[in-house]
Image (tube, rainbow, N blue to C red; front, side, top):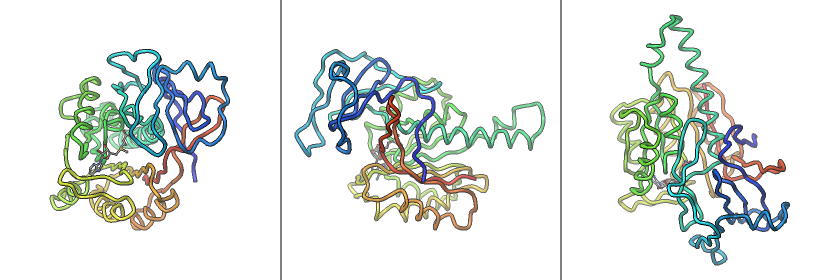
Length: 305
Ligand SMILES: C[S@@+](CC[C@H](N)C(=O)[O-])C[C@H]1O[C@@H](n2cnc3c(N)ncnc32)[C@H](O)[C@@H]1O
């Protein structure tokens, strides 16, 4: 069981946590956002908390709320993760369009890609990089939202199939894509139900070298079909395993606000990947605040070879 955090994301910092709130820095912008798990007191003095440019407030138990501003936000508001850039916007559900903790997953995927590039370089053993560049990794990103992982993978030279059921999410991901000046054919955009799309890909015999997914606890397909994490994930994973190529390097499942556990996800993945060998890890995806204290934001399990 791992408590996973990113190593290098200088545009994001968890400054403090306490009394039901996180104090975060996104670029220059400081935000105070509620997080119900934070049941301990704040560590930093009140005047630091008062330096927040905006604070999200909602009636107790309500997901929708409003931002109270002390200072206007930059427009556009852009932050960087290594060589990727992202447009942020505040939503009435306390979100910014990026889940900063995902940077730990992005770093993990990048390490797997770097390792296989080194291996394929050894196999081709010539001085030319042509073979490495031509053999692009094909990645399937399900429930892909505003495309955080899509941008990181496309920047790393992968061909990414980005699937999400929400038109506004795909539009936002396209803004990030334009900002990152990525090659035209590096992302295939699919506005569809993840389950339906995966089943169609299985029928078509399509293969991917990596699959990542961040299914919500509860969601809807464009035609109104409900998605429930515990009910629908096992079947989706069964289909995803059929999509893995012989050269597949990773499969990652992330979960937010589910009533599952990292251990349960691990058990599911272990059963699904039994015949494929490789390594499975699982744990909590965390953010580490300046003082070293960690908070858990979600759970993950991941397979790599
Ligand atoms: C938790 S967010 C993913 C966050 C993303 N991994 C990131 O790091 O930026 C979940 C996404 O799943 C999408 N979604 C919900 N139900 C879906 C479905 N049935 N098929 C495809 N996408 C769906 C939502 O539109 C949303 O963008």
